[in-house]
Image (cartoon, rainbow, N blue to C red; front, side, top):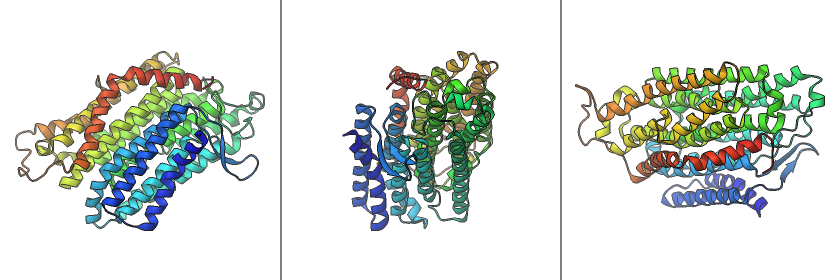
Length: 500
């Protein structure tokens, strides 16, 4: 039964996406059908999570060793609901938002919905990947499926942004593939196993090569997560993509890079081999550099969606920092950041899209006084901002607290205290680039906020409902955080070596 549900979870959005692309019919009927498909997808994912691990199912084999196969495990249970429910909520918003895009001459909405569903199918398949080959295969498919969403508006800038996203992502995936080529000679199998399956006897004869392979693989997979120095596609692609695409790119699809990094380190090589090595040191440096640089760039950026894109660069590297600590506590914080950041960042991008949809305004210095005419949008923006900064009792505080505690308890020289320092500095910068937007919107200064009364509003319920739902969830998840912390902690313990 579990194998059948895995096939449904992967094939349902892919087959539906192809059908939408072929039929090319829009309207209310399409919206109902798409919502039903995504609701069923979320239900299937939920059932899979409740059933737990599964036997491997081979989709096809290129040779006896090179197989594309699926298997449900504990890490799948973290990433699949983020994808399924994130796409479901954002699609409701997209039904209304794409009216605005079509009016400005973009592709028919069926173009967006088709590739939106294809991206979800590839992402779910990545979450269920049973080995490194399957992971690489669907990572490439995810790039090819999601790139047209960036291109949707068909402007010169959108074309350039889509190509930059494509080239960065493919280059990163090729680095990952190179790492797989090298590591194959030192792994007992390409299949995933908690704790890793590195042949230590073989690896001990060429430690330097194995270290370089792991480093290049993590940097390559880290491109999708926006890790420095190959983070440049994020602030380019997000301002050009429609808001629903930006929301899932930032909140969900970028997490594919985090998933690939965890698979490589915790399921292929193993943390014991890397702990204390120059590879760990280099990756910790890169992650903290990304956290700080992303926050600084967001602080100085005036275009709202681009500011949020730089914020994503910073915030996803919070999770990478926890992963690179190579401890159960650090990984727990990283997994919580994956979940909570998805909720918050999707909400923020939907709020930015609401502003664009209803006003056409894109810069942060143009929004003074707008909160009085769009109260629900900016209430959601404020709640999500407080969570991203790390203000209790919002969920963002919990993940950052666990990350700081994991860093302090890691015992790693310098990084055990430098990590929390950088996280705090980043939180201050986050407050500096998010809170002024809300303050100016609701409490404009003298001479500001001269927009004509009654000119703008929050838009229809399809715009407002997803924003408010995510804003409320950012608070609720913080209030029930012990449940998530215990769950993430058990997954982290498993990845350090154990059973499902």
